[in-house]
Length: 100
Image 1: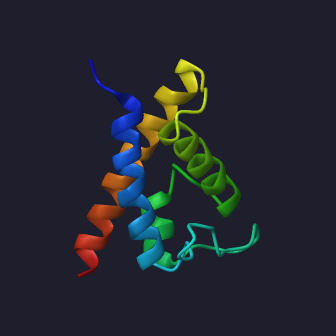
Image 2: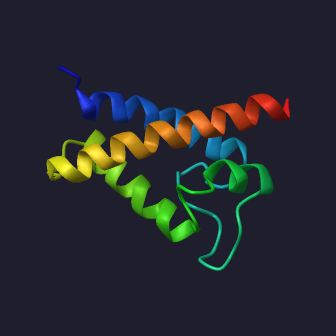
């Protein structure tokens, strides 16, 4: 059986690293964009269809961090965060690979 929390924790670490490298998160893991701001173009294109604005990103990161830290989450929320984080990570890695 898949340990979704453990896997999500690993993906979250990679996602945070990419977002820090792209200037979306600061070193403390906080989103540096305001609610009305836009993400860097390559990040915005990779997130298109998944995350529309910084507020949604903050929500996903909070759920992922809660999962990683063992806080209670409903199975549906855990599954949704697991699937969304995987898709976002793949999209960002593809975008970053294409941009190099």
